[in-house]
Image (cartoon, rainbow, N blue to C red):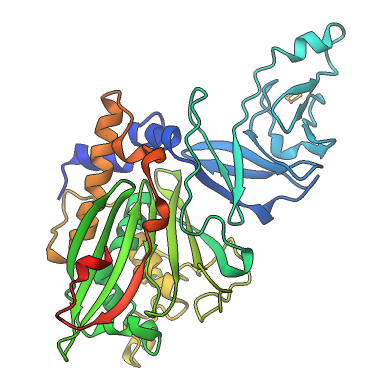
Length: 405
Ligand code: FES
Ligand SMILES: [Fe+2]
């Protein structure tokens, strides 16, 4: 349980809230899929942390990221012409190149070149990797190191990337990602015949073992099986929003990364990357989307009809009545908690160890930030992200799980 102040501190990320300022200052933000923008194509409106931006791809293939409002009188740069490695505002023709320089102000009768130098276009550093356009929205010029997350330099055929817009605060989605205890309960109907992960349903009370790391923490969720072997899943939380979750079989090298990127305080893009470190990814039943910006499906109904839950399917054996996809079950519970979960009314137990560990990392970091320090978990130069490897295994009871962390 948190106090109201603690809940506000952890969840709010807009209007200058410390958590939002810290995230923007010290971490690169996944902003759009690379496929969302084409050379000289339509600029993409992007809303992050309650502010509006545009992403676009210039003639030369380079991605640019500007504030949405034209610095002249605020027309949307999403309406701009995208040509000659620049965006040209359609209102008065002011033109800004992909590197953020103002290159034409046709409404200026004299001294145009000089005038251009003083137009305060706000543009942001961009990187592209793993099929994602990443942006840095911090102040000043101390751009943080780009995180070498476990999937970052892999070939495109080794991964699948998709996302969904969800009406919920970013933290409750992160907490769900790291909450191993829900796996064998909420998703039990989906996990049947889905590799070792099926063992999650045979023991619903995993014991958590958490190891702090320079990027956040790693943990093992250990479930004792009926034959006295243990089913162990090791997952990692990487600040400030990445959950790296183990695959469904021991022999798989790779995992899934889930990240909840704030659109504002009450909405997120919930991203998923499933990846293999040493081979091509073979798609499974959770990967067959038609629209990579809208997957997995949202619950089909509104709160007034219980989010479209199918009670008939439940009578016929489906545990949740959300038969659309495994992720739909997550979205249903996340949204049902309210846009921002009231954590002053919760009642935590032994199954919530990873949730508590997430909150501890974030609370410590934001308090350091408010005290004027660089958060300890934001010292990217000290971090080896490649060691955040998720693993899934069934081991003899005598095997020490600690060797896996
Ligand atoms: S508002 Fe964009 S050029 Fe005038
Ligand atoms: Fe889930």
